[in-house]
Amino acid sequence: QVQLVESGGGLVQAGGSLKISCAASGISISTYRMGWYRQAPGKLREWVLIISSSGWIDYKDSVKGRFTMSRDNAKNTVYLQMNSLKPEDTAVYYCKAWTTWGSEYWGQGTQVTVSS
Image (cartoon, rainbow, N blue to C red; front, side):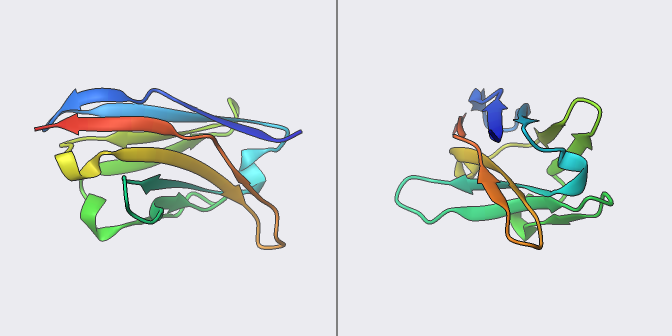
C-alpha cells in the first residue's frame, strides 16, 4: 500500500519560514517524480515545485527565490523549504508522486497559514 504523509505545516507570520515534509512508503521516491501542490480556499489546486528523479527542479514563478525542494532518497522523504512567506501562500500543501507510465499518488495535505 502506497502512502504519502505530509507533516510540518502550521501558522507562521509573514516573512517567516517553514519546512514541510512528505514521507513515502510503499514506493521508492528515487524512481518517481515528486511535486508539491497547494490549494487555497475557493481556488483550484496548483503546482508549486516539482523535482525529477535526477534532481532537476521546476518552480512556479511566484515562489522562485523563496521556496526550494529537496529529496532524501535514503529516508524516502521530500521536503519543501518555504522562506519569506506571504499571506497568499496560505493553503493546504499536498505532496504528489508520479511516473511517466501512469502511477500517481497524493498525500492527505498539510495546512500552511501565513498571517499578515
